[in-house]
Amino acid sequence: EAAVTQSPRNKVTVTGGNVTLSCRQTNSHNYMYWYRQDTGHGLRLIHYSYGAGNLQIGDVPDGYKATRTTQEDFFLLLELASPSQTSLYFCASSDAGTTNSDYTFGSGTRLLVI
Amino acid sequence: GDQVEQSPSALSLHEGTGSALRCNFTTTMRAVQWFQQNSRGSLINLFYLASGTKENGRLKSTFNSKESYSTLHIRDAQLEDSGTYFCAARPSSNTNKVVFGTGTRLQVLP
Image (tube, rainbow over all chains, first blue to last red; front, side):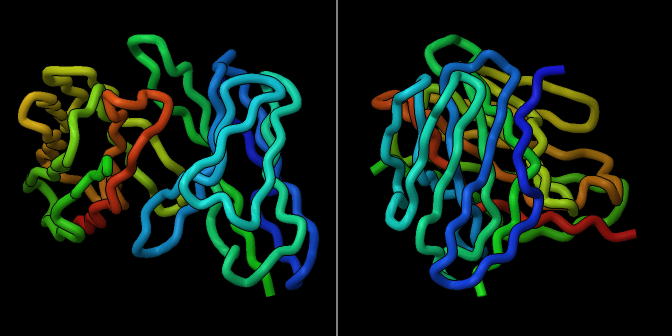
């Protein structure tokens, strides 16, 4: 079954720590996205990609890097984690450019930076 | 810029009743999608609309691009409908991105 799988589900790290969040999609979608969700802000776009090797900056990119190694895999990197990056992170995929390019979300990763 | 104004921000319904959630758009949107975020935090696709109306069980959604709004109607609400509902719209000016509303927190009461 087509899906978006995120790992880990939960992560705790210390301030200044290095964190990698992983996302894999089996939808054969070309677009992948990383969002963060915080109370009062809804979902905000961090980075997105339209294919392997491509990276586009989202609306709240500061403090984050991302890498799209294959069509299936999209990683979010926090190289110097800060408490302000404590959040719920969602990965999504879509086949933007088609007439029915809806989003499919992963189950989310809860990150706590202490 | 491209914005989505979602209302109400919170809503309480008794089981068996219904209501409507609404998203207004500040610019022309090409399509809209509605999600439910359940108690575990998962985002569940409800509808994707490029125009018109879709219905699925007790849920019905309408998207009017010309008048810049979308609605989600819930009828005969059940306890499992509780959660936060988001709309997300694709601006016609940039269909590679999606703009999210801030959500409607729905509580269904026995």
